Length: 404
Image (tube, rainbow, N blue to C red):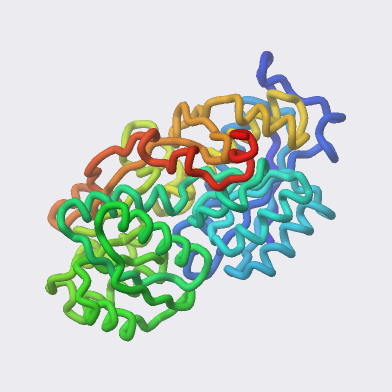
């Protein structure tokens, strides 16, 4: 477990330094937990820790009298390990807020603990819609995406182009199963159909049997509901088996910049995906990417940028209310628009989703690459108003109770 302590400072007016008596233990403790060394580590992992440190560093320029401590842990993609660590953090170790997580099964285990302890957890790369649906909580905030954000646009767009039969190759845990269910729901409403799905273990290395089933299905689209090392390996084998020259269109329902880097543009070219953020969007995103690259030697992914945003927004709220009390901080976070390069102006919705724009992007061909890491071309911007499941369709008890 890595620990770092960063001092922070006070700006005279609304960000005046909190009195020590209002901060439990005299220090604000933030925990970043995710996959630090396994198949999901490139997209978040140590990079999310680096992003959190940059956020604390920037907060230090606003409020240096506030003491902030960052702790990190590897949940190894195991819900029991993740739950054990977070329960100890919230209890014995006095952690005030947990960020990232990056695994849907682990997130669902942590959500109940955060609710029970009335502590904040802010999710980055967690796809299952249950986190802000049936299992939603006032203290569990989704800062990046959910599976509806990721699949609704691409499924409707491709089905509208006549690609109406789909076969799914998915990771066999909460994320993959929820993503397939969401895709099939949207696909049916768009006039398409699912002709089958297969589920593989997390960290699987041999996709031959799954790819052969997809090929044999006759589906026009083969959709991959996995990410990180799993997607990279599956797409490399797709190309090795000659399926890239076949009639079926591959679709990556969740793909990160580091996935494209690992598989190479020769393999990734033409793949489309939806992302909440891309480092080469504008001058502000490029400025953060330059700082991040100096630390990590890679450009930041959307999850890593969202961890920066979540940590900074949280710390600003702590400073504003002069307390780390969960209810007071949460109320301030909900009442205040996000002010950063990640999601400027974004607000938290009643179902605990941060509502922001998304982008449909496509991996470039090798000849189109103009500078290192600039792997995407933006096909279209998806406005926040179109990117989320309507609240009227929400299964979140907080929304349902409010509606009554």
